[in-house]
Amino acid sequence: MVHFYYAGDSRMRCEDVSIVTLAQKIETPFYLYSRRTYRENFHEIDAAFGAQRHCICYALKANSNPDILRDFAAWGAGADVVSAGELQLALKAGIPASRIVFAGVGKRDDEILAGLQAGIRGFNVESDAELAVINDIARQQNCVAPVALRINPNIDIHGHPYISTGRQADKFGIELPRAQALLTEIKNISHVRLAGLHMHIGSQIVETASFASVGKVMAELAAQALALGHRLDYLDLGGGLGVIYENALRLAPNTEPAAGLALSPAEVARLLMAPLKDFDSEILFEPGRALVASSSALITRVLYTKEAQGKKFVIVDAGMSDLIRPSLYQAHHQIAPVDLMPGKMQTYDVVGPICESGDFLGKDRMLPLMRRGDLLAVMTAGAYGFSLSSKLTAMKYMFRARAKNWRPFGMLEQST
Image (cartoon, rainbow, N blue to C red; front, side):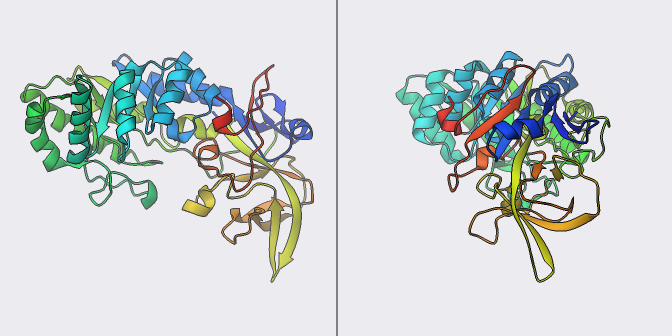
């Protein structure tokens, strides 16, 4: 559930905290987090896999805020990392190296070395060339590197092409026929050991058929690997579970919290696991967006309103440097007034202060009459919001809602 809602006074709360009151103390714009929301998301996804031996490996790329990482570590999560920096953050947060997998199509030599020295669970290998480099570095370190072959199964999630990663033309993974050949060839590569298989077909998946296909392809390849004598420690099914961006907040006081996830985690787990029920390998699942997106809103203040050629603009103090998803992906985030004022709704473009016409948070949005100083909440901003923000303008604070504890954060690299 999403723990942003309107109370009886028609003012938005995050858990039990008044956003209006908070914004009187804290300069906008800022990201506001509901710990209760991401905690519930984690436990719902974790519970979906039931008694099956599994690990929920949080994808740090979605949001690597150290407090969030410490919470996930305390709840037993692993980590999916794609850089040495993310590896360091995960370890510092208390996530054991044995629960960390290293992904990414462009691992640098120093990152591979860092993973080996830390003793991570495994490297998700994307190509023959990467496999050779890992083998060379492991030989220099006099060790054997645990690897999983990342398979490109040619599954189309029918989503935005920028976040689709399992189609044949995408840069990710090893084509299935080549992966099948590598199951035999890898036995002759001296300093790597096939520890698992990996598949991740994209992000923001909102149809169940894609997950069913992942389970089927994984089962077929795992059976081939076992027949060749490999011992598969884990089967990594990737992530991609989608969230609700439109209508993420109910625009009425004293209503039940909205759902944050686009699909039932229990149903997704059932579809993934149905073909894999006879395998005893540990199952890894790598949610990122699904855990944190619905837990945060970007709180911004109206600077000015204007009208040009019949189009109405709301100019706010947050822009594409704070939340680039609308400009980059044409992504939709619900934008809601923090104070649910009565009156006739107007159609606005909500734009930021950056000197580019592509700087917008939403177009053609229905909002009450906006005035200077009004507060807006850009919803479902917890994933790929702050983590994709730039230094074009400086984000001064990040906050999260807790009953008795408000903590300021500087820029992410200064908050470790």
